[in-house]
Length: 453
Image (cartoon, rainbow, N blue to C red):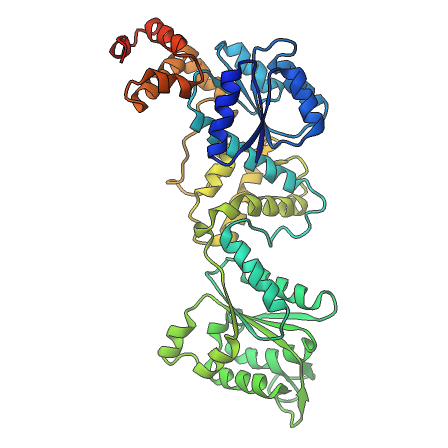
């Protein structure tokens, strides 16, 4: 994460840079808009913090220039000059947010991270090379799963995938197959829980004509169709006990026999099974064969629920939005606002990725802008976020309700309280000199801090 700080006051530039480093944010410093232009030409940044009033080229001119030149990075405008017109001009000119000095650096860091995250999502949505949107994630859990998939792909051993419904077990199975066979081997799948028990045997093993009532033609089973590739058995825990015996026989013998046939056929099939049930408990309860469990549980991949890996939600949302835009014929929406991403990350998603897909599809239907905003998203009544004081979603309304001097006074009091009245530390946090802070205390009649402490 790399940020360009543009401010003509050296103490603000350096203090912000030092504060950012604590949060693993790299920064480059520019004393005016002209220097910032030179740095933007030679380096790549994820975001920019720009002072409003600067000599040579002010903040508004710099923002306009970046937009005219095609730079796609979020910009936060910073100013000690608190007119409403400045905030509105900054937002209209392309700034993603507006913040008034003095401010809490932690608030600025949070804003920057949210904006960079939202901008990355927008870039993914509009990246034509982003062809596999379902199989993405940046959480440590997802990175570990990707490593396990690569290991699985190097063998022909059977794989068991576990996880709640909707976590993407089928997506993982297809990725294992893709890395194992590419386009050379067939991939066949069956959802055992979605087929009547009387038909599962015929679907898996096939049948001859006349094998049972209604068998008017010969049928190859999925084991034969998947020969030389992968057979994905989804919802394995729903397989009846009598068919568990037959499945175990096929796995052990590597041969399959159609219903009504006396001939056995050799097969070379890699089995990937998935379940949202606790197979170990089913074994203990006598509802699943222990020998079959161990034959299928050679390699295991456990997919955690989405609510336990919220870091994956932004890029998953990008993938879902990219796919739904195509399916719904909507080319207008480019991405999500920072507040929208923040709200999506707070969802519990007991339906996992499927529920996230439903939430985003509804948001597309309600959205009448080029970005999906927080109000377009409906998850649960108890899912709410605290909006940024001056966020693009609400800055105009907030500025009209509360004057910028009132906001500044509140920030000063908040900082003084945080530092137990230590004016030197408070002024450093606020990015102003100690003398300026003393003047502000007097100007705003902050009585309890008028005496030097």
